[in-house]
Length: 171
Image (cartoon, rainbow, N blue to C red):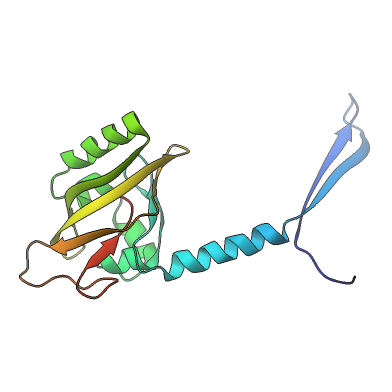
């Protein structure tokens, strides 16, 4: 029909015992739908009002969206991921709470409604109700929303929904 498709192409060279090339074996797969789904996810991820992210059990960000960076006081997800390299020590007012959270995830595979005091880049402490999900050895954001309020200020911190700081995931 003359339309274009995005494809993934793989090729392997078959060799004999001496290393001489005998033939090439290849496979091609149309990945247009997968690419469209990835673009849709990326748009949702980048434009979400909630902070969405994924971390390692050791406390490094693997992925963070712009809302999370903004909520935590960073200029970009890249700055957040570069500067916050030990989430337990840098992101929790009481680092032992992260260890408790990790233990619960290891026991149950997912945790909902876990509350702790988090720390923004500017040092302000926020109360966070959080959700985690263990996925392929990394901690990933669940789909539910969690809200956070300022503790060290008479005013609420500004976040994704005006007076309430909203984030999903762990830090």
